[in-house]
Amino acid sequence: MSMYIVLAGTTGVGKSTLTRRLASHFHFHAFYEHLDDNPYLADYYAGKGKEICFEMQVYFLGQRVSQQKEIEKMLKTGTNVIHDRSIYEDFHIFTQHQYNIGCINDLQFENYRRLFFTVTDLLYPPDLIIYLHASTERLKQQIVERGRDYEQKIDLTYLEQINELYQDWLERLEQGPTTTPLLPVDVCEVDLMGAGFDSLCHDLQARRDRIKGPVR
Image: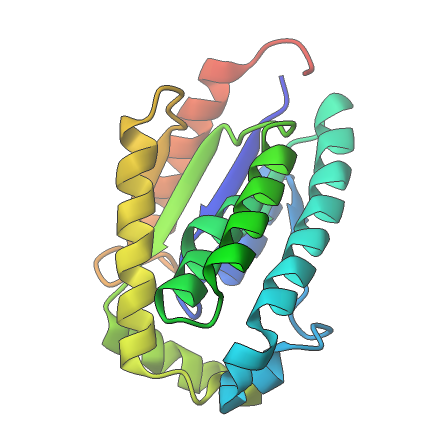
């Protein structure tokens, strides 16, 4: 049976790096976010969020749906997939955040919510979510170090708010009727460039062995 793993976590936590390493180690096909060609991000981080955030979130959702279609085709052929951030975070984290701070109004939020659940009810859920988390100070440091111009205005308050939304979402996920297995990893405590990576690979191999079966 093919395996579908999602790496979740906020900006700067190291999802893309770990996705590449795990894909190489296990020979999984990797899917990444397409951020550089997003026409809204620079304006959003420059403080124009209220003008564009609903359109931006719909744009992201369209990208995710296209990726999910490709992912499901691969899963049906028996190809294992690892995914750098999922469609689920778009609503539960980022659209929710825009609503909380008043960038998306009630009607926009409800329209997005209905569209999101209509789409995701038709999708294969992941077999495992690896949740990478870190302190806001560590996240800010890593954002500065990787040097994307449009991210440099991200502040600690934003990162704290996003971290809290991740915690809320994952708590609901764990308590839900159809629980997706969750593996939290504190990147401040686990050395994912050293022994921590080896330990994670051992854990994933054991999980992979347990779900082997026919192609989806």
